[in-house]
Amino acid sequence: MGASLDLAALRARTPPDIQPVDAPVNLAATRQDGLGCHSGKETMRQAAAAAGLGETLESLKRDYPVGPHDQPQSMCPAFGSLRVGLRMRRTATILSGSACCVYGLTFTSHFYGARRTVGYVPFNSETLVTGKLFEDIRDAVHATADPAFHDAVVVINLCVPTASGVPLRLLPREIDGVRIIGIDVPGFGVPTHAEAKDVLAGAMLKVARAEAEQGPVAAPRQGRDGRPTVALLGEMFPADPVQIGALLAPLGLGAGPVVPTREWRELYAALDCAAVAAIHPFYTASLREFEAAGRPAIGSAPVGHDGTAAWLDAVGDTCGVARASVEAAKNRFLPAIRGALDANPIRGRITLTGYEGSELLVARLLVESGAEVPYVGTACPRTPHSEADRDWLQARGCHVQFRASLEQDLAAVEEVRPDLAIGTTPVVQKAKERAIPALYFTNLISARPLMGVAGAGSLAQVVNGAMAQRERFDAMRSFFAGIGTGHAAGIWEEVPQKRAAPRRPAPEKPIGETV
Image (cartoon, rainbow, N blue to C red; front, side, top):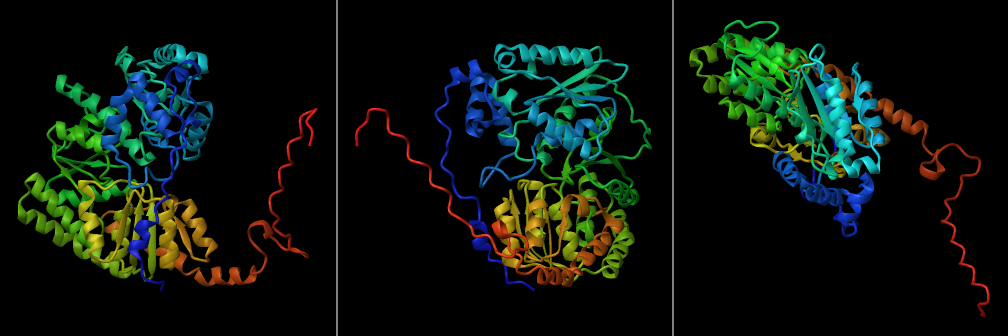
């Protein structure tokens, strides 16, 4: 086992304070020449505020606070909103941003399985600063908003259009019955792609709530069975809503739609719930819409024995379920969950990091399976609905780091020397360089059931299998010892020597200058 975790050192392992390098902003110049994404975050923020989007940025800042080190290092946040739109039926998505950003976002989207065209409105400095870009976006929206094919058209401003004040709020709210949803998702305003999912989900819930308040709306595609429902907030493995539905059935409740939804009419059904389960507790904008609709929120999730027991109690209290029904449900499910945990033990020390938002839930499941988890780092923020999970983990010796930086995650691996590191790509890479088995969180951990009985034993096989590779890592490291790293990587008859950078030649003397 590794050394104990030095929490004081870990907290101090945030990126060093960097003096701002942005020059004073010449707003007149930015309006004339456009504003490139190379300008720096502070310059972009100031330009956006000066262009009339100050309130938008303040709203994002309130919903998704950063700190203590600005924001985590992760993929472009706009990917989250793009992913939500591309997974919805009868929904078109149009991006407004630099061509390089659009290329990267569409590539990533298709890599993750999107089979939908992504609209793009190109621009140059002239169309950006003259207002022609907004006209081009408006034309693209009118051309796309065909009620025969679409219920909604989503337009996403990336960094440069937001910084330049492209006013999506001036787009029509509806064209021939097709809803137009315009959102700003700049990297300098939304910290993570997980929270960007909430930006679009919240915007859609707001429109759907207003429609439901005005009169009858479309019923769910699969109909209704008459039971009150608990809406589920946050993307999760497809089997998890089924497991949650099974847990709720003895309480006389059903599992409502998962938000972000897969089609527009599910938004109405989600709002028409008895309560909303904040499985991902950082969906601030979405929770605000449920609150406005008078729907209470429940934190944490039914993971493991303790998590399931506490969650069923919370659901019963919130939805007014008879205590006898709650206890009967617990007596039915908890022994099976305990049995699954005992039958699939995990023995070892594990560090866990990620940016999906379910990191604390996975950590709880690992701990109940028998693992020692001294460190959990998540790129997502601390919220009131994550307190129960945080308290439970800290009571069992786990340091929980919200808004974790890559430096903190790497420091935890270095200091703990775990039997297994679960994390993001750079964390996995660093761990394997240290001959520590590692698993990529997004593809290998979050893509498994976590809830109820199915989740109780779902992690043991992959986690134990990875930890069993420790001897192979040691053998590989021994075999390749001495081949060098960095400039000397490889096998050499004569190891190349690292040389100092060549000096720049002295400037030539001007003609006529005497010595």
